[in-house]
Amino acid sequence: MWVWNMVEIKIVFGSSENMEEIPDNSVHLVVTSPPYYNAPFDFPGLFSSYEEYLNLLRKVGKELMRVLQPGRYACFVTQDVRIEGKLYPIVSDLIHIMVHELGFEYQDKIIWRKPEGYIRISRRSGVLIQHPYPMYYYPDNIYEEVVIFKKPGKFDRSAVPPEIREKSKISISKFQAEKWYLSVWDIKNVLPHEKWSKYTAPFPEELAERLIRLYSYVGETVLDPFLGSGTTCVVSRKLHRNCIGYEIDLELREIIEERLGLTTKSLTNFIKTGEEDRVEILVRPDAKTLRRKLREEINRKLENKGRKS
Image (cartoon, rainbow, N blue to C red):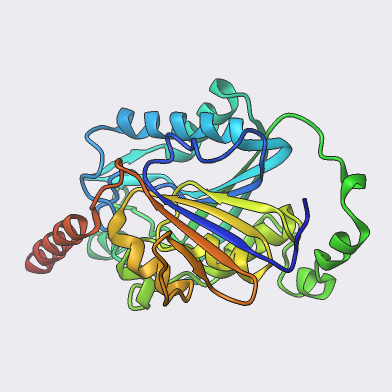
């Protein structure tokens, strides 16, 4: 089970509503960030309705219940989204779906706090500066939520070989110095001018690293059903974990391959990335091309915003 000196990465371009490539009870950890429902400057108009978005979470969550081992964890990085003045309660709806509809246990919630100087697009707080009166208060958001669920069952710690246990040991000095023990994590976000942010809305590698170190062992398998630009696979590989990633947008293939350092492709889609590492890439018929269309819509919104300001 535990092969720590060889990493296997599998990328599936297709919808994670169907993860037929993964056997039951074979995944040890889920780390993911679903698309933020029609977020104006990330995923404008991606879903026809909020109910369609919630149905996606239901279907993916059902598959996670199937593939995750009993007693293991699923970590979602997400946040509520405000569109044209209306705030959609993504976090509470996700918790309701995962716990009350699908049967996961609600384990923990961590606040990922970004630097205070970070305001990506919003100038909501400026409204009160222009109108310093009650009922003009709109705070700028500098945090996201990491919601952690557990599949019912018990993890047998005694089954972990001593060698793997030691290789997976968490640095206590790092744990204390960076205050991992708190329910609020101060981590720098991926800024808009940084390379990966122009492709999707990635979470920082440091956030993925903490979750993978805290909730999995070396040689185990991490799953990301919304892979985006590939952060979870990149960090899993660095930490000697296997990884399976699902991404519906085929236009992200090039950037994922670049981040994984893939240069030579074989006819069978198997790529050697190191002495022992192996990456398999599978393109299913349900893969789509979305990024160009989303980017055009984002640019249009930015242009309109510029004209109004």
